[in-house]
Image (tube, rainbow, N blue to C red):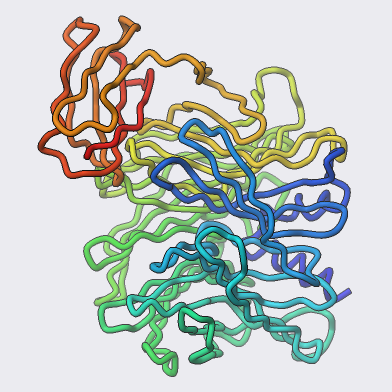
Length: 511
């Protein structure tokens, strides 16, 4: 019974997209015997990598997919961890690449016993280099990790919480901040329990290292659904200060996203309009964004956006090449079976530029059961976005969960959807190339030719998404593009139409 309550509470606290997955996981496999959810995406030089979990009749494996720039994918297996039948994969920050080329993960495994797990994988995922497990303590306390973070020293911090059931009534009353610091080999340097509140259940959402080595932890608390920022000394021994905000008659829902900006931090969160987070009597929620000063421990500015959700969650916040921000999440609309992903784009001061909703399945085709959720967002080399989420079909268990990888341009328009199946609201024939670029690799000039008269502009982006060259086609169908002044590396070449929509792209190598 305690395990069931533990799962339900964890689903409230930042893992809510998993409640539907958990309901279906044990039966959600096709004839190949698998169902999967990938919640983290990374941008690689030649494509994208998504990370999550994969269920089959034998249990659960940590799971990896890689794709090329068009979403064509391959699957890596071999990340299984013995004795655990289900993994809670925390979104966006639980899976990171480390400076030595490996990958670190912090999460939770459910098996014979529940355990918080932190682990390190080698660069090609052929083996687990090390893992540390923190098992249930005397049936009254459990630990789990919500994120992994690499310090400037290449040491690792895994952050989460330790929850306590003080009266053993099968429900946990509160949780402490739980931090583990390891070296790159997994040797534990210290473990710290830090009590923030004795009546709140903590969720860690983001962590940053400050210039002097102190840790700035961003979190959320339930029962009051407030947001918390706290500063911890570099040795983990001292809580230096904490800042909490929220409104008595409102819920400040979670998860949320944080980005560092000129010493301050941009924070996005979702505000609920009812006391109960699961209210079915007309509750509404909105996205809010603020800039927080660490030095003064105060809010500099705060905005509330007009987009209203019947119920929803923020999952990630990223900084865009133009200095603005993009907030990703998922929500529910009437009928309640229509779940959708959404992205809100703002300028550097939080002013809204555009807001788009996304479905793996077109809701206008008469399907009354749509369950599409987005979990993680990254900026791509061409200045657009890559988002990962999941699609659940209403024909469960005949149709399994599917990883949903969504490629967008800088204006939020869909370029393609994958990994399986590839279904798009904007169809592009990936087998037809209208742009030809040679020689490739190039050192002096690229010779460009195109077959579509709609091409009006050619742009070149570096791997950071910065625009380095742009040329108008002026009605031509060929041109010479200079690259001799560029640094060696991989670039993205885009052909755009008059509306600045991407017609074709090429991966270019400059020697």
